Image (cartoon, rainbow, N blue to C red; front, side, top):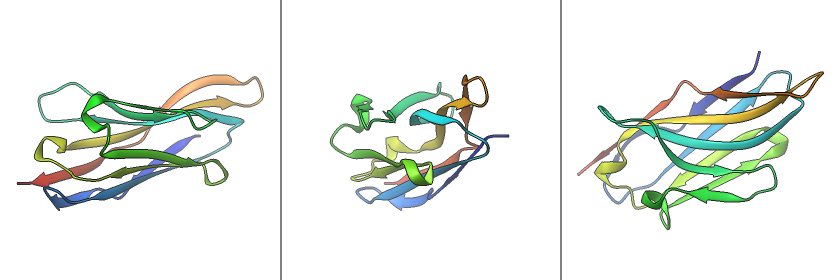
Length: 121
């Protein structure tokens, strides 16, 4: 059973910073892309940032220059450093990992339970 556990959400004032973490656990052959998505009330879930196993990153325009995604492969953990936060960044942030499972390297996507980020004006 693969699990993703997020932490680091909370309430912050506009202009502040938060760092989210997401750790994967379970019997895993390899983790490929890891990333962050968010969903605001009444809106669809959207991409925030992704990072491949090799370290290549991709950001949504909304976070470019403010957010930094990184990962520690040894710890099976992905991070999202968020600076200069805005009220419109308020959402539930979800971690996603594309995982290869033993013994056949079956590929599956897993999601975390989500962590609330609230930015006050």
